[in-house]
Amino acid sequence: MRVPDQAATGAELLERIRMASDRLAVDAQGALTIDGQGARGLVREFGSPLHVVVEATLRENYRRIRRAFTEAWAAPVNVMYAIKCNNNLAIRAVMTSEGAGGDCFGLGELYATLAGGADPRLLVMNGSNKTADEVAAAVALGVTINVDSVDEIDFLREAVRRTGKRATVNLRLKIMPDDLEAQLLPAYRTTEGAAEGIRRTKWGYTTEAAASLVDALRGTEGVTLEGYSAHVGHLSTEPEAFASICRGLGQAVRILEQRTGFKPTSLDIGGGWAQTREPSAREFAINERTIEDYAAAATGALKHALGHDTDLPALSLEPGRYITSNAQLLLSSVGAIKRDAGLVWFHVDASTNDLPRIESGRHWYQIVPATRMTSPLEESVEIVGPTCFKSVLGTGRRLPTLARGDLVAILDTGMYAEVFGNQFNGTPRPATVMVGDGGVELIKRRETIEDVFGTHRVPARLAAQSPRHERSDDVLRWAAGGFQA
Image (cartoon, rainbow, N blue to C red; front, top):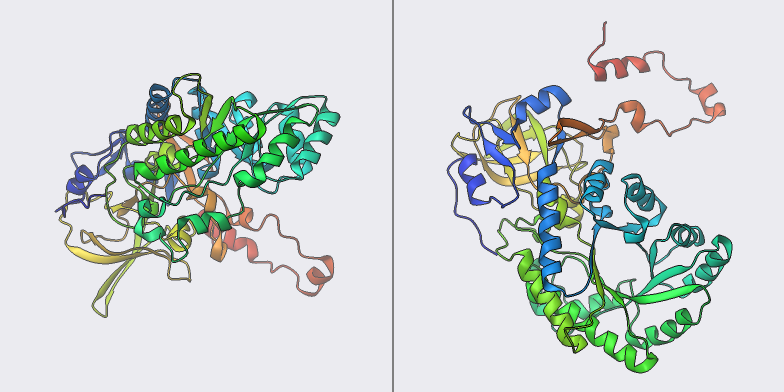
C-alpha cells in the first residue's frame, strides 16, 4: 500500500489517486465532471445527495477481471457478479449485457439478479441457512446451489420431487490456512488469529466433515455434485492471501478425492478481490497490486495444489467490490459551516445513513471538493452529516474554504453503500443516476417521507385515541418544496 503525496488542490489529489477505469475530470471552471457530466448540473436536475454510477467504469472493471482470470486458467471461467455489494437493477443489467453470471443470497437477490436479465445457468445460490423454498426455487430455475448445511440434502430431495428438475450443487468448504495471518491488513488482525477467526465463522465444512457430505450428495437421486466452493472475503490486499486460500482449497480437493473418489468438474473461489482504492482498508492509501497479480497468484497456487495444470475444472469467482467500487460516487451539498473550539465542521446533506460502513466497518472514503477542484486545500475540517448521531464522514480532511451550496464528491461508494443505506431520523434515501451512452438516466428514484413510513400501520384503536393531525400533510408539502402558508 502506498500513501500518495499531499496535494495542493482537489484536482491534483484526483490525479494522484486516479485509477485506470475512472471517468473523473475537472472542467475549465474548476468543477468535477463524471464521464463528461458536470457535478453541479447533475444535482440541479436530480437533487442532493445523489448517487452517480458510471456505466463505462462498470464495463471496464468487469472486462478486466474476466480477462485476467481467463488468461490465467485453461478451462471455462464464470465471473459471477456478487449483487450483495450493489443490487441496483440497472447495474445488474449492465453485467448481464457483458455476459456475467451472478452470486445470490436468498430469494430477494435471486429476484433482483433475474430481473436484471441474468441467465439462471450462470448463477449460484449461497447461504448457510437456506430455506426449503429457496432451494426449491433454485432447483426449479436451474441455479447451482452451494450447499452449506446438512439439512439442505433433505430440501434438495424434496425440491427434485416437487419440480421434476435435476439439482446442480457444489459443497462449500471451510479453508483455514495457517499462513494467512501474515498477509492480513493490519486493521483485520485479531488476537485470535486468522485461522481461528475463520474456524468460528458459520460458513463451510472442514475436510473431515465434508467427506461424508460428498458421499451423501452423490448418493441423492436427482442431484449432481459438480465441485466445491470457498470464500473468505476481503481481508487483505496481498496476492499471497488469495493464493493461500486457493492453495488450501486445492489441498482440500485432493484430500477429499483420496477419501471419496470424487473429482470435481467445477470450483468456485469466491470474491473479496481488492481494488486500487479500497475504502475497506480503513486508511488513505493506494493499493499498487493489480487484478492480474491476484489472478496469477490465486490460479497458480490452485493449480499447484491440485497437482496439474491441464484437465482443469471450470472456475467460478464472485467479484463485487472490484467491479462496482469506483464506478459510483456520492454527491453531497454543503450546508451549515461551524468554526469553534479550534475545529471546523462542514455539514453536508449526506450522512452515515448513506455510508453506514463508515460506522460498522470503519470504511475510509476519499472526499473531494466537487465545485472547487482547483482551489487550495487550505482547511482541515470535519465533514459531518445532518442526523442526530455524530455521522462523521471524514475527520481532519483537507478541503478549500467552502460555502453553503458547494458540493463535495465522496468517491468509491459503489460497494456496500446503497445496499446498507437506512432511514434513520426518518430521512429518505437518495436517488441514483447512471451516466453513459444514454446520457444521464435515473435508475432509482429518490425516496419520499411517505415511502419511509409507507409500510407502517396504526391500529384502529390507537388511531381513534390519537388521530392523525390535520396539518401532517403540510410537512410533505414542505419536503416537496411546494408548501403555501
